[in-house]
Length: 189
Image 1: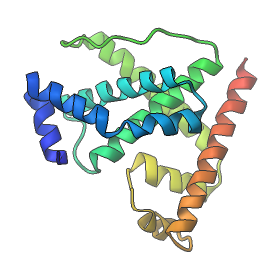
Image 2: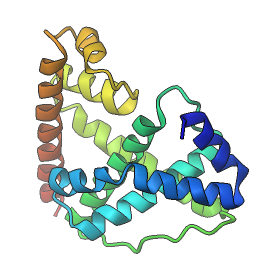
Image 3: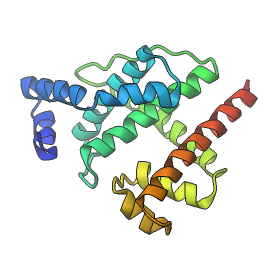
């Protein structure tokens, strides 16, 4: 399915939407394995975050918040990444919460609560990113916040040698960010 076909199917609702959600679930399933190793979370936690990210993406489309400025895969990955970071933060601070079930007709108070939690988590990650060097901050922002997928483009924007260098830096920067987050959460306990 093309990105436009996915958007149309999600907006159509009913059986088309259900088929599209199943397609999205199968299409990006590889992210679960990478989240398990990258974020050191269990398979169950990774699958919960994955399902939550699919529901979150559907919600973004239905509310008109997905504007098509990036590919769906990039946008979805960002949502999933944030769900994993939220999970790590909750687990590290021992604030275990039940996974919310998303009803077909969404309650506005739940949306507001979920949006507030997402904003708070995002703001917290941004605080942690301030502890990174400028190049690391830029690489991670271009890749995960602005949705740039082309590492050659990111390399040009942050003025590093090439896409391979930018990719290696991205990996190291992400590991450094995760270490900063874990250290901060341990200090909070």
